[in-house]
Image (cartoon, rainbow, N blue to C red; front, top):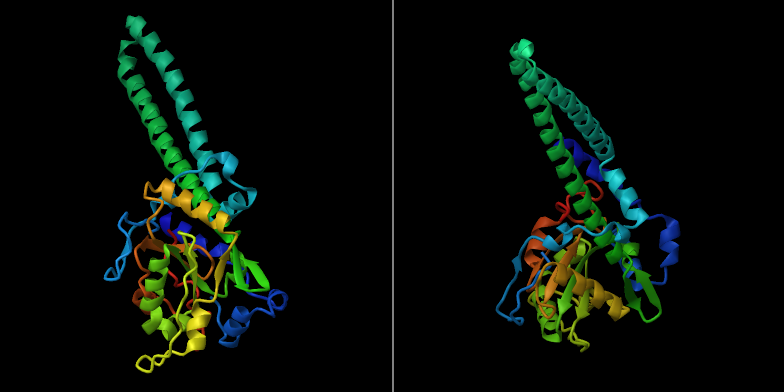
Length: 328
């Protein structure tokens, strides 16, 4: 069953980018540069301030596993959940039906047992009736456990989808004239969101320099979010040693957050759910389809991104689009 559910996960992949989508953003530098390269495209920091000597660390994104109240779950998230696991509702229905059937059988067996105990002439039937009653009670417990587990899995999935939907609605500034929702980059770029104070973003920028070419080949784009209100000034300098050009560095770090209050609210909510300090610096990595693939404490593991993610152009373009990693 687990393998069948995992296989169904691929049903909800985003549609391919069409000319209509491209025309909407034809004036955008980032989309033009990505398309020229034939590109397609856990949060939970420590309480310590950024340390330049700190490379990175990763943990499981527990905030994604906290159930959300039903009033906060949108119809879109529910539809996506049905698409990802189409047989879950059927299984849950049968679990309820089997519980009702076993419960009814147990009720009948209970009345029969009472009659046998009060009637000496039916004392020989007590053993058989007791066995049937035990089987019915065991069936009720088993199917109740299966239903509870399925329902918990459903709530966790809805919470993850709702979280990702809220993230996809946040705005990004491509340039001075162009603002787009994050969801517009699905199938185009793998976003890495860096959130922290100015010093953290500056150091993350510096650490990414040796991996600029490899990150761009894998469709990675960075979204810096400064939590202390200071706008970081990235210094783009030529490096002959690593052969990194200024245009590529600017393209990797071109995106900016729009509507800072909405971004801050979303990040604070995730940190609160994970019981971590609001001032902790974090990074969040998204898959090509816009879903969360990982997050962590400190600085993003740029070298791991280059090693793990497949290129978005060349012989393997399109074939390895689903190899972004499991969804958290």
